Amino acid sequence: MKVMKKLIATLALTAFFAAPAMAELKPGTVAPQFVAPAFLAGNGTAVDLKAELKKGPVVLYFFPAAFTAGCNIEAHMFSQAIKDFRAAGATVIGMTAGNIDRLAEFSKSAEHCAGNFTVASDPGAKIAAKYDALLALKPGWSSRTSYVIGRDGRIIYSYSDLSPKEHITRTLAAVRAIGVAPK
Image (tube, rainbow, N blue to C red; front, side, top):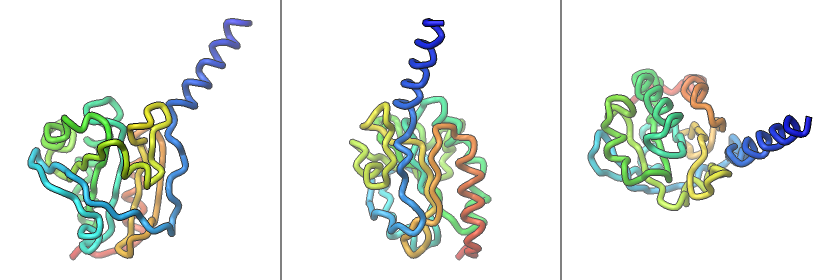
């Protein structure tokens, strides 16, 4: 019985520290503006949220680190759904504070981003902190938190979960609910 209680306590503590902060910005909040170094298909660039919002809504998804299991799955799923996001008028931007030295490679990898969307670097998780998207276990890394930001710069939808499974379907549904026609 003691061993079972100890195991349960250990699992609960691990789950607490592994979980994202779960304090993501709420709908209606003005999204913090940023310009960040980024990569698209392996090429260095910069991403400017204000400029991207002029084109339409933005799906900004934070992920813990390039080339980690859940992040690989999530990037691949966003890459596979990119045509659907574009058809709905949205731009997808991935952002991470983890393994930023490998983002160029990650952005062009056929298994991950496949050059289909921009992946931004967030050294020190400064942007993630403004978005309340920090990983409790690794405070210098971002959590797995996704936002849909409307053209007016306000958060329309937010979702945090360490599992990558629902981020794509939930953010695509939120973008489609806006009803923005592509330009």
